[in-house]
Length: 330
Image (cartoon, rainbow, N blue to C red; front, side, top):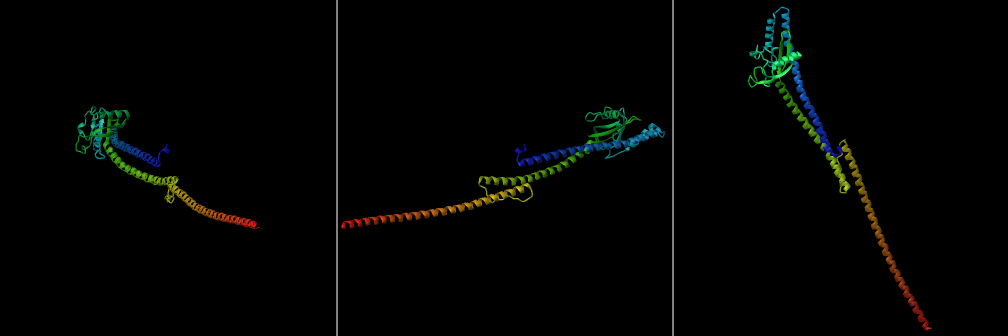
């Protein structure tokens, strides 16, 4: 499968897979951090509720010891818990299993009110849910919408925000103690973390893209140059004096060095063949000159032979004529 892809495509494929895995892991960790933030808030709520719950236990024990009546102990516990604050005015409230509000420091108008039908903007009967959780598990978390202490940031005291509360029952008096944090605070912190992480992730991805581009060029350009030179040589049109850049200690440097050695040997062979060809041409020309000279000599000898033959013939004729004349004279 990979053999069907170019080297550049393989490098970018590797880069894309790496970036995808890195981004997915980073995004997962970011959302996991949100869950961790929420769990940290839950742990803190439990510890805070236990602190306030210890106030109830302390006053109940003092009532059991006869130091206070139950009513006096309850009034004392309510007075202490009403003043407890943490984290920008967060508070504790008390209600019973009816449910009826025993004490609410932010909305004192609810004190003594039966609130089983009280709903948030999503239609959840939150106090009835407090009672259900305590009856089932003795303690637990409930999410709903509620007003902020001292009103919303925009100044609207009736604005509702998502809230997560921890409620725990106090069986001796049939009460439920609760406290909570606003989820939008966690979401705001999460959004800030997400923004910071997204900026960091974008910077890392940009760096990976740049490195992938540089690495791709450092591999592809030398390979293309070498391949082009070899194709030109194989086609007979190559410049045998061209040499590849063999600097470095990687495989591409080895390839360039090997190509340069090959080109040098081919160049030397071509030069040697040219020299031999020149020598052969010179020898052929010499042989042609010798042959021509031999032909000229042969022609000269033939001409002389013809002249000698003519002279002999002429002498023979003269001798015959002398002999004939001598015969006639006799």
